[in-house]
Image (cartoon, rainbow, N blue to C red):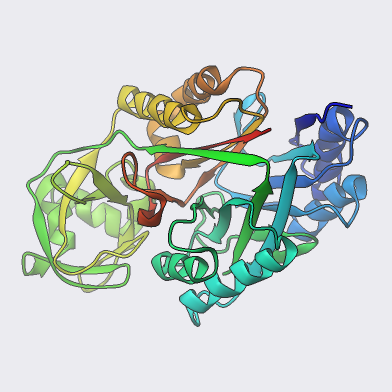
Length: 399
């Protein structure tokens, strides 16, 4: 008998967490669970839900033995387009797919150790050497993911594919959640290790362009940018937007006011930029960013347009599928920066991604606070890094 692979999506906007989880899971189960046992369940849900009840609703359908991963979001990508305050579930049934799940809550204490622990746990569940890569579900309010990557690669090897998204909380920036089996954690990481006869394609692009002259980072610590060219970093925004607007940003929060204007770090002579969104001003004129900015880096103010953002998403989707013979399901981590930039055009972006990967291919996704991915073609997997403002498309094919 020929081996088959089935993947299906369910979603619900029921405001009751338990009922939303049950409805989304049942919808997915009707299309996949009646034909074969699910090997993997991925769940994305609004942070406004009671998270434990949401997962209980999903597990009421699929049981406790099926590997389950996911997290809270800044918006969900469903079969009916981008949504808010909803739950979306993907179930995958395939004899070709092998899965291992690892968890750590030690990112703040020792990020490298956290990556090592999560990878070790996932490997114990998937001892086979036929491992295709790991998808991370991290806390979008933490930094240090370059060290998490080092810890993972100590276990999987430096050439291992590590990709994924940093979970959100509906742009409240207070607490995000990560899911692993029946567990709901915060300030941690969940690693999904995929293996078997499984091929993974990854594409990531952002489409933002610089609008300022380069400035050198003269003082920074982790994700706090203190000085540019020897001046308080906040003065950079005052220079381009004026003192009055800068004062408004201090009072209202830069994240909501100017989320479409991230900082870009030029990576090399190719002109590629790694984006860092700014979350707020410090009283000393510093800027609090979404990821590490090293001293000595050169940064520029970036801007994106709706058309360039959609074009970047199409390019990311093409990169993801170009090396695969077939795509059985896809996961999209799309930056919350892009969501606010695109507005109503976010639906067009998702439609264009679907056209590239295949309109009938099951796709699940969410809006994130960071995207962990290789820096882009032609960089190898070992150059993986956290970005913001990017569209990350992960396509999975099963033989």
